[in-house]
Amino acid sequence: MFRKLAIIFTAVFCVLMAVPTMAPNLSQYFPSWIKPIPLGLDLKGGAQLLLEVDTNTMFQEKAEQLYEETRSILIDRNKGVIRFSNLRNHDNVVSFVVRDEDQVSDAKGRLKSAFGTTVDISSDGKTVKLSYSDKQKEEMAKDALSRSIEIVRRRIDALGTKEPSIQSQGGKYILVQLPGVDNPERIKELIGQTAKMTFHLVNEDMTQEQLISGRAPNGTEFLPYMDMPEALPVPVYSRVEVSGESLKDSQADFNQNNMPVVTTVFDSAGARRFAKLTTEHVNERFAIVLDGKVLSAPTINEPIPGGRGQISGGFSLQGAKDLAVLLRSGALPAPLTVIEERTVGAGLGADTIERGKIGAVAGVIFIFIFLIFTYRAFGVLASVTLMINLGMIVGVTALFGATLTLPGIAGIVLTLGMAVDANILPFERIRDEVKAGVPTLRAVNIGFDRSLKTVMDGNLTTLICGLVLFQFGAGPIRGFAVTLSIGILTTLFTCVWLAKVLIDWYMNGKNKKIGYVK
Image (cartoon, rainbow, N blue to C red; front, side, top):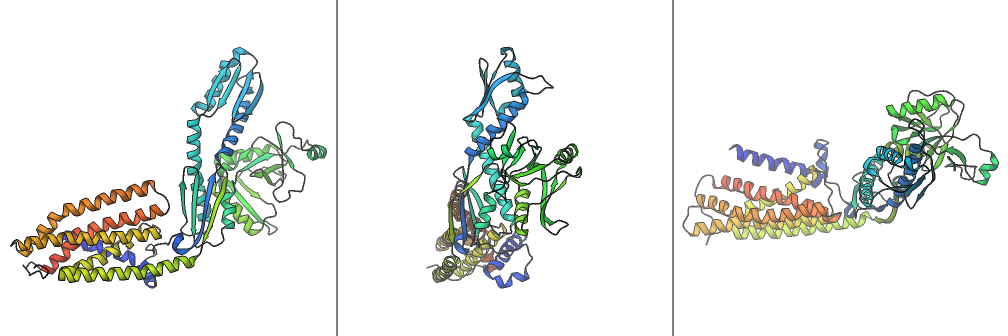
């Protein structure tokens, strides 16, 4: 008895999950966590972007960092300066010549201690080379792709875009689908910015003539203002005093003059570095750099020990909010390039849904007519089972938060067709047993028991295919695999267990005559 109640409860619960989707006007009577199935781009309309992760630029930046770190390690006075010459970065390979051959092993030891196994270090006489191997580059590219997907997701979520679909493609591409978005320009600008923020001290010894000439001395870079590209560049030291990776939070706000600004909060390590910077360099300027451009270069009037800062740069309120989103979500590990953009009108989706409804209703009616005409009372029960199965597919899909697409609808239709077959198999077995003179109650039990293996084999093999498609497919293929897999599980539940409960209820412990036996 408990088993039958559990089966009925599960069926009722899943069907109730489908009500907000199948009858949206009733969704107000359901808890907020029971939501309708979100529609995909092909049904709702919206924008689709294909982004490429620029790993080549990332490798170049990594090589530049390797160059700077190598230089710092070699001139470390605490461990003793290693005399070297011809330090350079060529084709992402850092090399230098040790002047004293006796210091070659010491130099290699320091570098290996600092970089570990992440960098290949080799020597040829006095020449030492550092580079990333192909395997290391492959791992870095995979990491950059996964981190980029997560950062893009955080940026889009912060804008309030509902039900975005963000997934990798081909090892270096990110497919972004934004249902309901008809103008993706602002989103493109946000997700395309690297948002790498750093804090640098300003080189106050530079003259105007040097700035105009554009020739920066070693250790100094000339960076333009973000909002004033025509102004003279700002001479900043290449050394990064505080990195944006230490940012814990950023929000748009207003300053005392009621102008939009961006407030920043550093983590504990970043707060210590920021406090040290502002304490040791009072009355000096420091530059706030975002993606190679200077946001502002204020003067440090007093130490800032609390780890809280404020970025001002003549922002509009929307500009301050966008910058806060970028900084809060983190810097992209590699630049993203939009290589394909599509906009899908919602009218196509609405027309498709309407035609799909008509086709689905017509198909269901014909199936019901066939079942009832062929199997009489059992056909009625099979029709009820199919309707419950459909409701369970929709309910479970909504419960998992999956997005419904055109291929997803195809998966539901295919599953319902397989469910009809799963109903017919035990019915035909029951007919054979009754013809052989077996009482109907016993024939029902035998029919379900002996057809179980066939029904399970057929559906489980299809389920394995669905799981493989979900694991290795992308986009529409995954949408098809989701509804197909859910549908197979609900079909097994309704046709193997629920149908047996309904037939037992109909038979009511009696050997009733079955009308479809001839």
